[in-house]
Image (cartoon, rainbow, N blue to C red; front, side, top):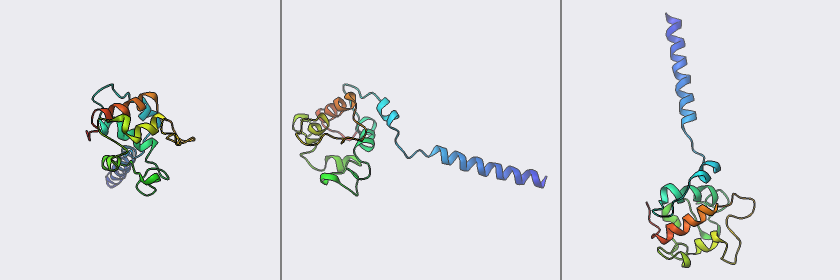
Length: 137
């Protein structure tokens, strides 16, 4: 009986640790992000824009909170809209973010070579999100 209780407790402990380890997914998978289809209207920052930003813009050495390439961080909504020339709500044609992701800025395209490119759907989704007011939704 003593061995049964000991082995049961050990089994429960390892099961709990394994479940916790595999249940905590703190990485963003490119295939998962690219599989999400951003709709033509009612674009959600939290569901559609932020996952793309975290995977393709706000990684270490670029537009994260520590590096802030070009003085910009895209780690959350407030950082993304902080510079009013980067995201101009309702005016994608005047938003530097749209110029850069669409490759019409005249500068280096974003993301730079060697990093995962945005899909056409993601680029259109960013334009739609800004055109719909760049809401934190």
